[in-house]
Amino acid sequence: MSVNWNPWHGCVRISEGCRHCYVYRQDAAWQIDSSRVRKNSSFNLPVRRQRNGRWKIPAGEMVYTCFTSDFLFEGADAWRPQAWEMMRLRPDLQFVFFTKRIHRLEVCLPPDWGTGYSHVAIGCTVENQAMADYRLPIFNRLPIAHKLIICAPLIGPLDLTRHLTHDIEEVSAGGESGVEARPCDFDWIVSLREQCVAADVPFSFHQTGARLIKDGHIYRIRRQFQHSQARKANMGFKPKEWPF
Ligand code: SF4
Image (cartoon, rainbow, N blue to C red; front, side, top):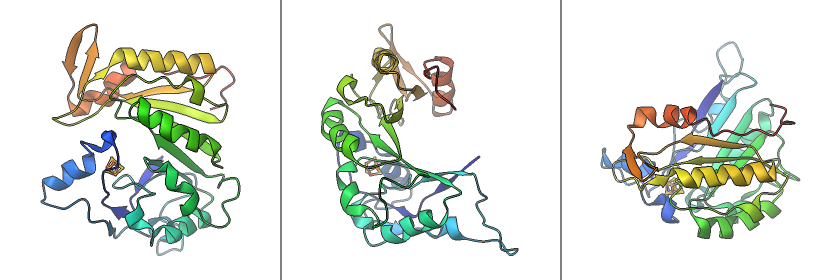
């Protein structure tokens, strides 16, 4: 089971992958300025209790964290220490967040982070080769208990071979959504999978995006089918000794 925890909302674009950011797309329909970050009413969700004293989020849940912003966004620096503290108080949950600001992690960490909270996974997002070559060397030297590479929205071919270290727990790739989505070429997905197989790193193709190029054709895929179509492509890879 999983829950979403969005402690704050809003962000500022930082790289090409942000061009059609879904936070901006959704906010535009309500004339909301996405660049003005605000705390959400669910800010303290992980430590909320029911009337009987039990946690609202029961033990064992996966908590998808900060998907209406970037957890390491500068505009949320004042609130992040409390967010870390809530994570620290709930070692019975598994938190995961994705970031395009991995270069900020060191200055944002709580004092007791050590080699990384064992129940927090961090996904470093890379959308093209330039961002992979900039962000992944930083990511690879950071103390993080669970490391994921998120290639999304994938807007170009990627060579990750020199970045696929033994502690990467998964590479996940997906195309871009939305009416202005840039196409994702299925050959890029095939190539990433091959790189992961060669490095013995798990791989998943989590969504096609709205425009997928395959065998020279561009296919338009409606939002509700983008995950299921990716699953049907059967591109996942797990090394034999993968325990999960
Ligand atoms: S970092 Fe994420 S949330 Fe922030 S603008 Fe870019 S895509 Fe949107």
